[in-house]
Each structure stands twice: as C-alpha cells, then as structure tokens.
Amino acid sequence: MKSVSLALSLSLALLLGGVSSQAVADSKDPIKITLHDWTGQYITTKIMGEVLKKGGYAVKYVQADYIAQFAGLQSGDLHVAMEIWETTGRDAMDAATATGKVENLGETGMQAIEEWWYPKYMEERCPGLPDWKALNACAEAFSIPETAPRGRYLGGPVTWGGYDDERAEALELDFEVVHAGTDAALFAELESAYQRKAPILLWVYAPHWAVSKYEGNWIDFPKYSAECYNNPSWGSNPNLAYDCGKPRGPIWKVAWSGVKDKWPGAYKALKNFQINNGEMGQMISDVDLNGKKVEVVVAQWISSNKARWSQWLK
Image (tube, rainbow, N blue to C red; front, side):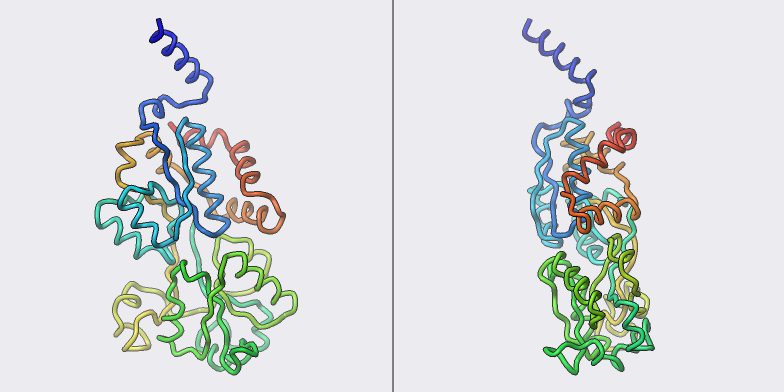
C-alpha cells in the first residue's frame, strides 16, 4: 500500500509540473554551480540554477575564483561554470577539457569583448586614438598625479586574467597598469571620471551596460592570434608574447565530465541554455543602474520566459 501511495504522489507531482520525469531518475545530490564577482555572471548562473530547480534538481551555488575553479571542476568538487569568456578564459578551459575531466557544453549565446576602453572626450586630448600607437604620445594625458608623466591603465581584478601587464610590457607602453579590486570598483571609477571628464583608460567588457551608457571606444590593438600569445617572435616585439589585443568570441559553458552520467537531464538543460547580449545587458543595467536585486531580476526573467526555459528541460 505504501508503494502505491508513493507512486500516486510521484505521479501527482509530475502532473502538477513541479518535477521533471528526468529529474526523478537523476541523482538527488546538489549540482554545484560556481559564482564569480561580476553581475552578469551572477545573473546567468542564477537563471540556470533556478531553471534546474524548476526541473526538480537540488542546486548549490559556490563562490569560486574564475580561473582557479578549473581545479574543482576537474576533481568533481564543482560541477558547472556558466561563463567562460573566449577573451580571458579560453586557455584555462582548453587545458581543462584536454584532461577529459571537464566538458565544454557549448556557447551561451552571448558574444564577448574585453579590451582597453576610453571615453570619447579623450580623443580631443589624444587625436590619434583609437590606434594603440597613439598611447605613448598621449601617455601624460592619461596620467594621474601618482603616475605622471606615465599614463595609467585601470585593469580588472587580477583574478580575471587578461594579460594586461604583459601586454603593456610587450607593446612598450609608457603606462602603469593597476588593477581594480572588484567589478563594482572598476565601474564606479569610470562613472566618477566620466562625470568630471577626467582622464581614464580602463578594462571594459560586453555584454555590459557601460557600452550603452557611456560614449567611447576600445583601443585598436594589433589583432589577436594564437601565435601572439604563444610565440614571442610573432608581432611587433620579437622577444615577448602578448603584443596584440585580447581575443573576441563566445562565452562558453563548461561542466565536470561526470555531470552527463550523474544528472543526464540537467546535462541536457545546461547544453540547451541560450541567452543573448541584448537581454543580458538590460538585466545587468537593472541591477547595477536601477538598484534591483539579482534575485528579483532573475525571477522576472523566469516568469516572462517560461515557454523558453521549459524547452531546455525537455
């Protein structure tokens, strides 16, 4: 009788749409999804996590370093990372997938740009922009009292990678590279400088609200190639690598290779996840500019896109 009651209860749960039939067959252990330190990644991760919860899966969010997380993904201590940017994470991702312990689950649908960026008003002080060769002639125009006469470049947190220190050295730029402590600090400094029309050159990425709120341009460095990063003889500096811009391309999803067998239904949903730059940029704006909580923005997206995310779970 107890088994009949259990079967009836399970059938009722499935009919009510609270749990997918696939989730019933999958492991009941929580799927550990990594969180990093920028708003968009929080949103992407929470959307995927909440969709998995709708499918009946247990989800645990784990704060992890962007690059160092690959050790946890290889060991199976971490299970899913929702944003690996072609621009800064490709080398670490390829090294991890080459072990066979991490799987590339495909593109998220978003396209990434991360590069040195300046406000449009700086072109009056440095007419050769956006050509990177203009930077040394205008280094003092980008200086602050602490770096003068050298220019100042504000990079992202050191955990983001990106090789900006190496790039400045390889291209022999008369700039001091400093790193913001957090994503919020990076864009707070941009906001302050922009309002005062003060000199600033910094790491800006897309998808992000900054590229629509502020008028400006990315520096036009020599175009990236794999040889630039791996072969010092390539490019303008025959002795050093990284004498080019950052790569551009997709934002990827990755997972511990055991996800496919332990949570096959969740694995399919993860592979199906797709979102675009426009909608992500708007959600980041809602959080960073309009003061909404990430959880509220994610809940609104879930409510408005049920027909879409329901297909991910099938």
